[in-house]
Structure formats: C-alpha cells, structure tokens
Image (cartoon, rainbow over all chains, first blue to last red):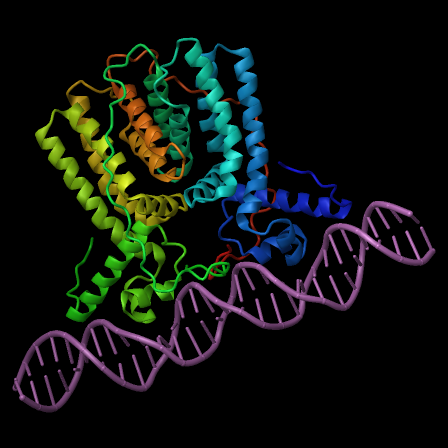
Length: 225
Length: 225
DNA sequence: TTGACAAGTGGAGATGACCTCCATATTTTG
DNA sequence: CAAAATATGGAGGTCATCTCCACTTGTCAA
C-alpha cells in the first residue's frame, strides 16, 4: 500500500521539516488559524514544495497522525503483553486520557478533521482501532468483558473525549466516561443489555437545493470567517 | 440575555428565510461545501443582508442549533414528567441516537463546529446539557444511578456519537455506547468504581514539542482545502 | 392618505488566501 | 565531469469572503 519510493536527500529533509513544523503547530492548536503559505515559510520551504509534499491540510495532518498512532499502538501491544487482559484495557484507556490531556491541540485538530469527514485520517485511525479491538477481544476471551458490544463503541467514546477538549471540567468528565465504559463493559452486571432497535427510517433526502450541479473538480479556495 | 429588539417585518422575513435555508443545507450535509454568497442567493437575499443577520457561519449554525436544542429539551422534560427517572434517562438517550441518525448532516456539522472550538455553540449546548444533567440528577435521587460520575461524561459520550457519524457500523456502535453508558451508570454493580488517578510522573510520552511561541500574526480570511 | 424618517437591502468591488506553473537549483547516475 | 533526473520556490492568477453605500421598503405621527 505505502509504496515507498526512494526520496531524494534534499526532498526528505524538507519533508521532515514540514512534518516537524506541523507537529509543533498542531500541539499549539493553531493548525487552522495559520495561513498555509506562512506555514511553508515557517518550515523554511517554498509554497510549491509544501504543496508538492502535502497537497492538502489533511495530508499533512495524516502524516503527523501516523506517528502519533504508531506510538499509541506500541503502547497497547506492550500493555497487552504484560498485563491481564482486563487490566491492560483499563490501563490503556486511562492512559489515552492522559495522552490527550498532554496534547490538547493535536487532539482538537484531529477531532475537527474527523468530524469534518476526512477520509485520509480514517485510514490512520484503523490501526488505533485495531489495537483497541484487540484489547477488548482479549478481555472478552478472558470472560472479564461482555461480548455483545462492539469495540467500535469504545472508539466512539474516545472520540467524544478528544473532541470535547474545551469543556471546563474536561479532565474529570473524561475520566468519568472511561469509568462508565469500563464498568459498562463488565460482564457481570448486564441487566437488560442491548435493546433491539427497529430503524426509524426517517426519510433523509432533502437534497437538490442548489440549481447548479456542484461544479466538481474545483475545490473551495476560501472559507468564511 | 437575548434582548429582543423589535425587528422590522421585512427583516424578520429575510431572517426566517435564511434560517430555513440553513436548516435544509445542514440536513443535506453541504454546509461547508456551499459558498456563502451562493447561500445568500439560495435564500433569496443579498450578500449584505446575509452578513448583517449572521456575520459568520457559526452564527448561522447557532440559530439552527437553537431550535434543535429547544425541541430536544422539550422532549427531555416530557419524558421526565411521565416516566420513572431511570427509564426517562434511558429513553432520552436512546432517542438521541434516533434523532442523530435522522439528522446526520446536522449532527456532523455541529460536531465539526464544536470540535473547532466554536464558542457560539457552547452557549446553545448549555440548555441541552442542563436537560441531561436534570435527567441524571433525578435518576441519582431515585438511587438508580451512581453519583460519582458527572453528567458531563454522558454529554461527552453523546458528542462522540454525533461526531463519528461516518463510521460504517455507526448505528450499532452508537447503541453500544449508550448501552455501556447506561450499564456503567447503574448503581448496583460498581466494582472498584472510579479509580484514583495519580499522574504518571515518570514522564512517559510527554515531549516538549514547541520551542517558539507562534511568532506569526494570525488571521483567516480564507481557508485551505 | 401622506410625508418624513428610520430601518433594511443587495450587489459591485476591494481584499487577500489558496494553489499552479516553470525557470532555476540540487542531487544522482553513467 | 556531464547529463539526466529530481526537486525547489515564489510570482502571480483565480476566486471566495466581506465591506460599503446609494437605494428601497416599512413605520408612524399628523
């Protein structure tokens, strides 16, 4: 998939500089407030170079996200190898809150891009999701955790934690979410468990608002505000 | 707070048209893809009028969101008046998933703006949050729900559900989150409950990444992508 | 009704961010 | 070293955003 092409020395250097700068801007939380041209200058490269390496903001975010995810997955694997399944899961989730707390800007940036429906990040998330799925699966196998709730639900909860980072009592609430999830996952206490749910099937279809059929190909060179 | 100023008839009509159009675009999920000028034309008003009524995209979103929240709060109150506390809470949360499901575009748009840190929406959310807080508080009073987790945690989980609407198995996972939250909230089965959390001072992955404090003057008349 | 003032309108145009293009520079290869 | 391959960067075109003001529309007292 990631067909590594031998990048020229100079190119590699510039690329790395861009990613490094991106990481800084991410963590500072200014990712969306910074003009892209200025971003290039900040990294010490020309505009053209920036656009050649990363044609879009998302592409740049993806590159940063990739490293981030790799570290987290490593951590998950280490935990899974050294702790009982249920404990590994709990420790990982608690640690996620710590991590997000320590990288607020990055979390918010990623959450924004995710919510906006960026496909590029979805691929990056897959690895993280797999790690969580593995942790949950192991705990299920141990019998410590129910098997009728998908691991994706845990991902969703994490997503909510990362997205709501500007709430006043964030830390306490984030810990609360993890507590609820962990307690909710415990096998023993399932009362009515999952309720069967018939689809409302509410007709969405409020399409066809604009006369012109979306001048495709063209993007949106500017954004309001 | 909302000092109602007597709006002229014409102005009110235009304003309503704008909000109505906004709601349609929201639900279609095209809110960010539509040029603002075109949006004005779509609503049948001039650009100036649009900007006078809603100086920013967020302001427009806020107006739509307001009506949405009002309806949801009404629902919460009705449930609370007719059902036992615990059941009211459960029904409301399940219903929220239905609602989000039926208004995907709106949910995604709001989630995007929220994650981006829009302050305008935060105010609108307050009402919704109050409703959830009330539902939880009533359930706690009944003894059906634990009292050591803040209602804000439930809001966070809901936020995660709304923000992740493009996931393949969204519906099942959303229901899963609610199930976990509800089961996690049950008083009976608290094992170790909330774990005291001492900060991992060993400094695992807390790198200091930012050397310089963002030297550039910011400003965002346009946006990339 | 009518006149006069207040309130609101809308769209032309300035602004400036995004992105492309290509003459030039750098690295690699033969 | 020469030539080919690869990469650079920044000047400038394009187009969405937002302002501004001459004009229209609504309101109200007489």
